[in-house]
Image (cartoon, rainbow, N blue to C red):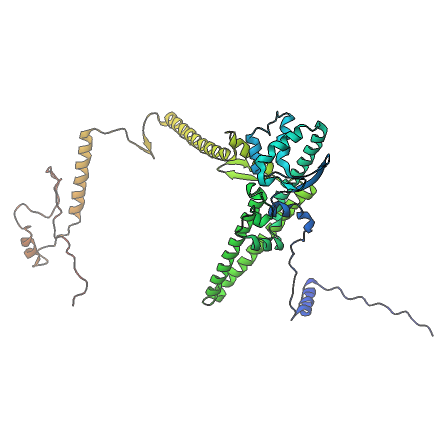
Length: 430
């Protein structure tokens, strides 16, 4: 007995319509659920510099110089402005200026907080660094440059940190509290530093988040009230809101991803382009650029605000010049074609004398009188016996009054059409 191997049966190939019908039968009665893309999770370690910059006001780095322990801090934009006014950040500054710069970077010496009485401690710290060799000071300067670079990156990451849930929790805790006060930082003397760019940005972003949530809440209440009267009509608005929120969410994710790539991976962002009446401006988006603009303002030079105004004025000036050039070209073209004559459409007004004007007015009045006379319909007395009574009433049976219109040389300026005037009446009378 021979056992034949079983043969595999291949399913017949279905057409597109048959596949769609089979898929519809398979999914009939089932709810299709598609997971929306979730916000990518960010390792909290990324924000290790953002949190102290926000809730303490600066970054710190410990150091041991000789036998003394130091704690250095990053500088905020207020301190940079002060050093700029003192001339410590000029391009041609000498090594002796490093002493003052390093003195403002000191936070603690041997556990003693310098910020409490900074004006008294700074001269002593300057003398200490003045007695130090050049190479150790160069190493300290490099370390200070690194900690300030980290602070600048933390300012950029503040926008990403503000979107995290734990950032919103901290905002609920600290809303209405001065971020520089010792009540918030727990460090005496921080109230003298002022808020840095990261703190200002974090407060502004959370403020607008709160405003956005309040507006959305009011809008949802308005839609709920409207759904009681026109439920089907509001369905389109609900769909539009869902699309709008999804688009806002995607834009927020894209913005967050772009900032993280710039700070962590070093990818350069495209320059922020602002259009203003035909003017193209590149806006500042880093702390260095903002500080440079502020320094220009303090020196009395042209800052970003002046550039915006100048660009707007240049745009208006270019538009005026362009229109004047067009008018000049039209005038030149008109003079070449028509000379010095005033041309409106296709009529040529070369000017009329007083006699010609009076003649035209008289001719027009004569024509109007003739037209009015032709419109008068006089009845035939032989046909209607009562017509004679009407003619007698209006004085048309006197000698010299005929029924034909003849040409006359009389002044017709005061001519009045013959015949009764139309009297207003009511169509229905009670």
